[in-house]
Image (cartoon, rainbow, N blue to C red; front, side, top):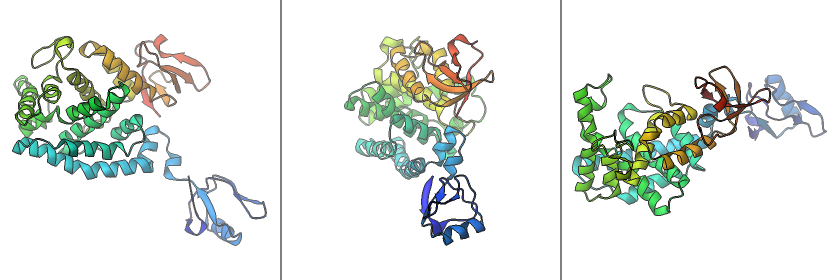
Length: 352
C-alpha cells in the first residue's frame, strides 16, 4: 500500500484503509474501488491524502511479491547495469589473456549485494532475474559469485575467505568460454564425443587462469569443480580428501545455481525440490559443507505456504535437520504434518 495525494487518485484505484472525514464520518471502507462519484465526494470533503492498494498487495505468491517489489526492481536495474562490465572483464581474460582486475570484480559484487538486505533475499532476487541466452554463461558466473557470498557467510568463513570464494565462483567456469559456441548452445543432447570435449573446460579454465597468475584456489576451483567425493567426477576422479576446499564449495554452488536460477528452457525448481536433489546426490559432495548450506536455504522458506503432491496445503513451520527436504507443515485446519512420516512420493511441488 502507499499513501498518495487525493488529487492524484484515478478511477479504479482501490482503498487500502478506511477514509474518515474531518468530522469523524466513515466515507469509504478499505477495499472500495473508486469511481468518479467517490472521487468527487473525497474532493468535497477536502480529503488531502489517501492510502491505496498497489499491485504487490494483490500478489498471491511469494515469487509475485518479489517481482513486484521496488527493492527487486532496483536490484534488477543494477544487475543489468553491471552485467556488461562483468562480461567485458571475462571476455578480456578469455580473448586477450588479461588477468581480471579483482578490485573491479569485487566492486561489482559489492554493488549488487548492497541492493539486497540479506543473503536469503539475494538468493530470492537471483531466482527472479529473467535469463538472456546471449549472456547465459556470463550470468551464470555472475550469479555464482553472488551465491558464494551467501554460502560463505552461512559457513562462518572469515571475510578474506569469503572474498576468495567469491573470486573462485566468478571464474571457475571460465573454461567453457574457450569451447566452440555451437557446442555450448547445442539444443539437443551431446554425443559421447562432444561430452568429452565439454569436460575439457575444467583443464582449459585451469590453464588459462594459471597463465595470468591466478594459481591456488582460483585455478584449482576451475580444475576440480566437477570432481565428486565418491571419485566419479572429472578430470582426475579425485576423492573428497583430494579436492580443494574452495573447489568443493564451487561444486555445490554450481549445482545450486543450475537448479535455482531460471534458464531459457525451464523455470527454477522450488527450494525443497533443490534440497531433495542434493540429498539424493549427497555422497558426491562434502556432507558437512552441504548440509549446513541446505539447512540455511530451507530456513529461508519458513512461513511460506506449501502445496504437496497429495493435495495438502499448509505453512512451513519447522525444518527437519535429518531430512531437510521434508519439513513440518501446519495445514489449513491447524493440523501438524511431519513430511518425514509421509510416503516418499509426497513432496512439496509449490511454495507461495
